Length: 136
Image (cartoon, rainbow, N blue to C red; front, side):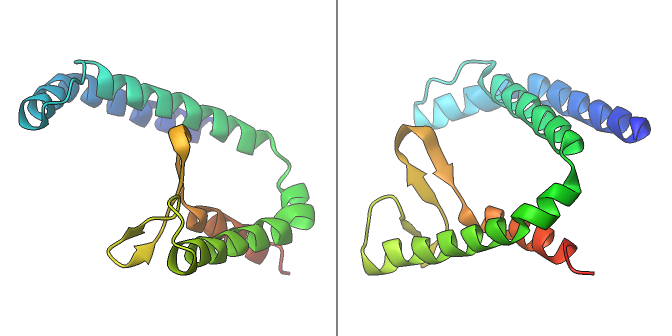
């Protein structure tokens, strides 16, 4: 377990070093090409936030008793993911609501105001994994 965490930490640090090295060039190229105003550390800061959130999620999942997840919540997570995918298609294709926009003929994301976006298929994939793990 500790060896896995060590390798994971090394890869995360390597990714941060690479992002710190190439971030300013990427920001300058985008600023020049599209007239944006990204700072030199914009991409590094974004990557750092993602790393911190990922480490917190990893620690939470390592702490969480998986049998509780499989026995009590697997069906609920799977059904919720499936219902959200159906709701996304219904809201986009039938009702033409703005928070379910079409890209190349498919509805993939819920766009939630200033908060960002959510892809229900990711919840469905996790739910299917946990649901199938419950079979003996």
